[in-house]
Length: 150
Image (cartoon, rainbow, N blue to C red; front, side):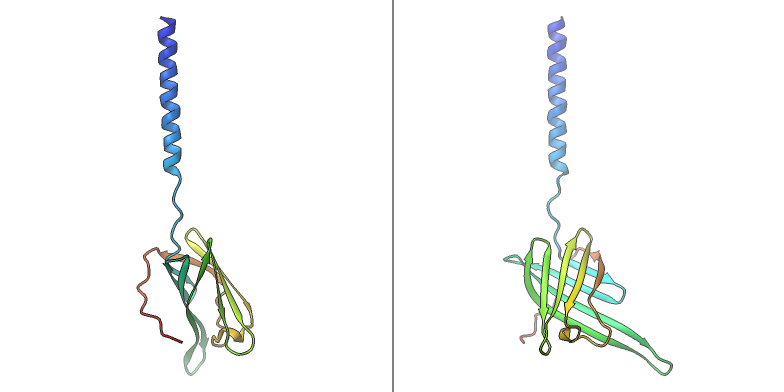
């Protein structure tokens, strides 16, 4: 009788451990895509993952100018295809002599953007910068028009 109880307990313990192991494997999530739309104040970034570890990044930024007579906005934008290294992408923009670097560090449901180098090198309007923590508002791959050839 004791041998039967010991065998039954052993089998139940084995089944429990196996099911626990399988449930832990199922809990591991695949790496999420960085494709989607991200927002920060008036700025937006659309990202589309491409083949060969590349991404297409389209940035649109604005700086509002509230004036008594008329409201205007300074604007800035870029549309580039760059390498995605892990979860990081860097865009080099150069208007004039000194380049502007926009680094994007993708994290779950957000992207942290750091703009370095020349402020005028990006070619953005006055006070327009890409810096900030952008929240992912959509995981749907953006519908982007064909890129213009530069």
